[in-house]
Image (cartoon, rainbow, N blue to C red; front, side):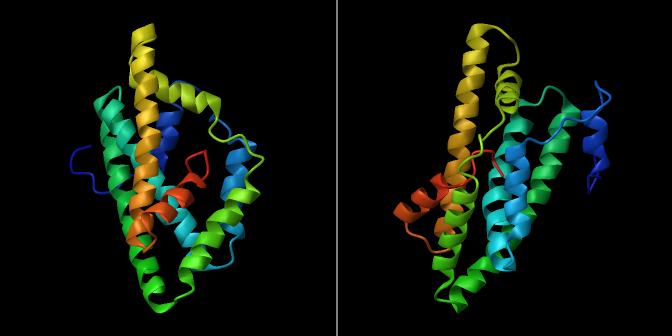
Length: 192
């Protein structure tokens, strides 16, 4: 895969079907989370929720996958995908930084978008337990109890990294530390 500039989405489908015929299904909570993005009529707010918060959190997940990959191909796919996602996040931040400079009401609109999405998803279960367990097992590298504890600690660190990244991006948009912490805590529990 060396020298590969771009990864086709087909790579993920092939990888997912490597050891099984059918792909997994999205949970109701995951579908509801995505629907909130599609239902947002304001491009700036949708971009904020998707690029700055969702894909920004996803970046942490991709680096986690890279660091805990069971093989070189998975490591390379995670690395290249993270590089691509980083461009999306950078574009979203630049777009919104400009909006915040021009529109003095933008911070209130961004805050409102987070709060509205949080309220819309308040009845969802958050991160799928199977995904959570898979991440722990991946980071553990084995099913030994001490390894599983290390895997659990690594996933806990992943969640802290996601929160820290969201707070950094929110601060970059002009929110103070307290507000960035509060708003980051309202982000979806399913990493989107």
